[in-house]
Image (cartoon, rainbow, N blue to C red; front, side):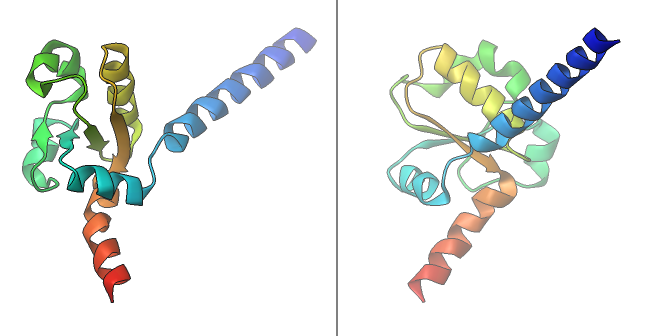
Length: 127
């Protein structure tokens, strides 16, 4: 019984750590904004249906499930890439895939709502 309790506690700890890891990797909005202003490729890794409903201006869509097969579409591996999805989970998975395949400057911007707030944040700070 003690072993089962320890296994459950370890499993719970792992799940909590994995959940927090997804959120911890989301970049600061100022960093994301600077990278986009400097010409980073903006990559939406949601489904084509989600992309058709709403997207960040100038983003390209490659669903995370197809990313490994479509890496060549991203160009030079040194080009900065800003990745987003709906909540940040798929974009973190995409960031990992890109880094594992030699891309050197990949930023997880979180979700579409985070991306859309970039312009509002800039306008608010200018006033």
